[in-house]
Image (cartoon, rainbow, N blue to C red; front, side, top):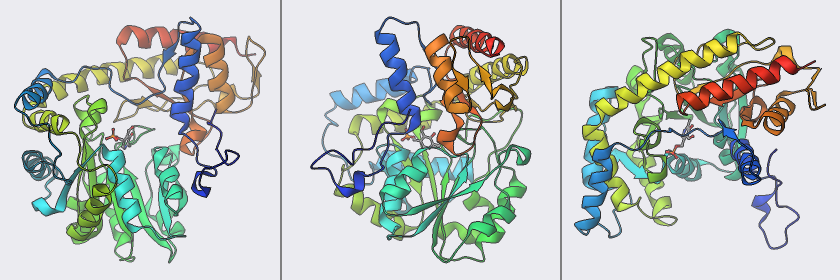
Length: 408
Ligand SMILES: Cc1ncc(COP(=O)(O)O)c(C=O)c1O
């Protein structure tokens, strides 16, 4: 289901060879096509909150626009937002960053892009614990690096074990990317695991760490989120702590991400941004500033709704034959294993040999879009987003159950 690379298209650069749109987007595109044909499609393929952005953030954007805050912004972010981010890092993460160690971008995705572009030389390796957010390896490759997988198996609660990390480090390793709570598994890595990872990193001073904490507030069952830079302050000068407004405040379309990290890296990233997109949208930054200051209650209400849905999903999946679903402690995804469904035939005559076949058959026959685990580097699983209305999720689970039960 990946979108074809464009190596056959005249006029495009070599860089485009093998460059594919993430499978998450490919699945959504097919879902949209079916919907355009009049099918009643439910898409649980994309990772975005279904909630409206809190009112106070929308009001702040509106006021900013009316007040004429519509000019170009400073490349690294407007002062009020940077100060709000600084306060957030201090109070929520125990991290002290000076203002010149903080930058704002058009989403956490741009933070990642800037960071990799500022540091990667051809052939540098980027360790990406799998299953991973699809953009990590794609972006590393696009920018001349070599993504190196290290498996975080279900037996290890989808967490990175220090011994496994050590095995994949070479003298070419430039980055380790960590993402807890995780997209796609919802795993929340323990303090102990993070401390052990830090211990390994102490032996390799050339390695930067990208700590993607974008789901930090979507956390359940009393789990605790730890920032690596706070747990290992001696490593702070090579950790980039990335975050953003998209998930926490239901603001994906506003495009605001931010990071705290060493000044030399932030400065280089800012230089790249100044020559690509310039600063993030002025009114979006006003909205994000208000959200950081005033939306704790909204965040908690959304978290509780996700928690309710998470339990609903878990229960629905635990009754499906051939499907095994761990209870995720964070983010808004479940990552059920479907090993028990392989080798079977769907009612529509499709042979299910892998998770891609499963996801395609489910979409074509029951109109539910999910993403096959191979897109995230670990099969046979499915990533199912529960950032959707309760009634929609209930209907989706019914259809998935019907599909699974019909497999022969
Ligand atoms: C783990 C992870 N990091 C970063 C992002 C990108 O977030 P943003 O909308 O801030 O670019 C996503 C979005 O899906 C994500 O899942």
